[in-house]
Amino acid sequence: MPILGQNQYGKAENRVLKVTRDGAVHHVKDLNVSVALSGDMDEVHLSGSNTNVLTTDATKNTVFAFAKEHGIETAEQFGIHLARHFVTSQEPVTGARIRIEEYAWERIATPGPGEHSFVRANQETRTAQITFDGSAWQIVSGLKDLVVMNTTDSEFRGYVKDRYTTLQETGDRILATEVHARWRHAWSDDARPEPDWDRSYGQARRDLLGAFAETYSLSLQQTLYAMGSRVVERGPEIEEIRLSLPNKHHFLADLSPFGIKNDTADGAVYFAADRPYGLIEATVLRDGAEQRIPVDLTNL
Ligand SMILES: O=c1[nH]c(=O)c2[nH]c(=O)[nH]c2[nH]1
Image 1 (tube, helix red, strand yellow):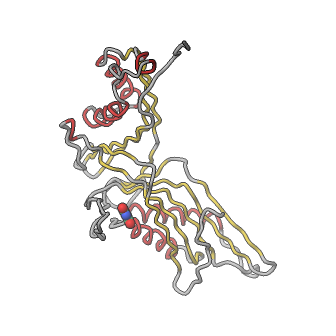
Image 2: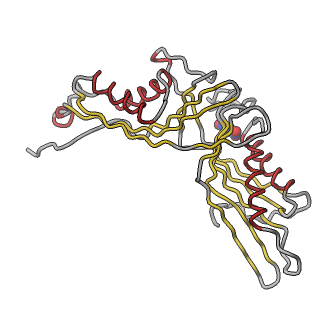
Image 3: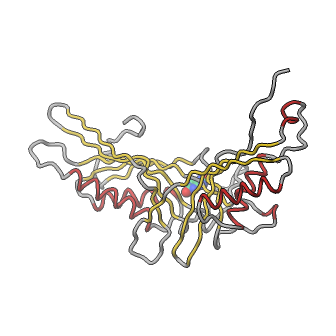
């Protein structure tokens, strides 16, 4: 009979976001936690007996419950706490390996007192597309993978409720997206001086972040329009901007089966879903400008 070698199991990539509120100042911990347990697991492989198996589902629930009940001080502290729990609470489990990736968020500076807007550090890519037909230029600048999040000031309600609608209305949700934007400059004629491309890019990026952070959001569509409008209004050299915004859904982890209350009030723990995701896209134009940026943003 073939021999069973090293084996381990658990739930991989639990995407946990914890938001701690210190008045209007919010703090976030954003982790990707993978659990791998090992021990006396021969029988499940060899005979199919699940007697010794703590479900991977339970390991997932433990991650979210611990984040809520004990908090996340550091990835190391959180991992130690989880590993100790699995090894000491389950007789057949003799080893635990917890792998954690932590995502770094920086604050978006806003003029108001609230501090609940964040941008993922060092994520984005700047893009440019230059076309020339021998007489006219078209310069489309942009950025992609700029990940931003508001931990409050976002609601979503009043939408259509058809037979298949199950989404609950909410007055306080996380709004997070990955900004993909391209904007077309008015400049097209060699006879006119070129804009300062770096200055223009910096301004557009600041306007996208500023409008995202400062808009009290009733939908991602409304936030998109606010972001595009600000770029066009503050950048006279920009005619048109196209935005593609995936809605990076964060759902409150349901900890009620374990008797743990988890609401947005403080210390809320969210499950960050990666797919499927809402995809909100639109062009915002200067009044009188022509819509020329192609709809398909991926064809750079
Ligand atoms: O901002 C949103 N816009 C939607 O169109 C939508 N649809 C949905 O399920 N959630 C959201 N959120």
